[in-house]
Length: 183
Ligand SMILES: *[C@@H]1O[C@H](CO)[C@@H](O)[C@H](O)[C@H]1NC(C)=O
Ligand SMILES: *[C@@H]1O[C@H](CO)[C@@H](O)[C@H](O)[C@H]1NC(C)=O
Image 1 (cartoon, rainbow, N blue to C red):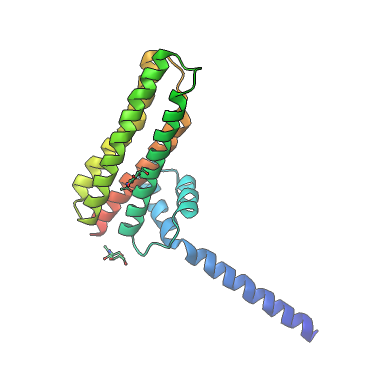
Image 2: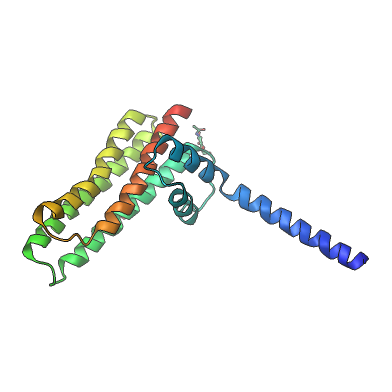
């Protein structure tokens, strides 16, 4: 009786500790994703939370730090797409027409990385209007890239990459506005 009572209290403590840790672990991420998805229907709450929880390594103390981390993730997403394009350009299955689209996309993502770097600096110096312009410009890489294939009547091999990047861009943009509101 006493033994099972002890087991029960032990399990209860384990349960409470894990509950506390999980709710504490990423409270800012979940709260920020909730606010962002309410402010902008383009932000998918579930993607926002799972993407950031999986990729933001240290618990951010505030929205500014979370925004800079999100911009770094947007940048590494752009960098991954940029290297993916370099691989696709070597694949003989693509026509010259499709390769010309891929080349345009490569330039777009290369420029986007510069814009994201500027956006990070603007957030750090609290120039949120400047950061907004740079993130918006960086996001255009994905839509303009996708449009290239549409206009050339080629099937885009980057549709999923472009839309995932765009989604991370929308989150970044809404976070920049939340930083502005919090400043
Ligand atoms: C956010 O946290 C960082 C690191 O602790 C700190 O340097 C910065 O001043 C904080 N920013 C705001 C807006 O609270
Ligand atoms: C963006 O990614 C590129 C390629 O990995 C890297 O060279 C650059 O330093 C990154 N910039 C920022 C601001 O994180």
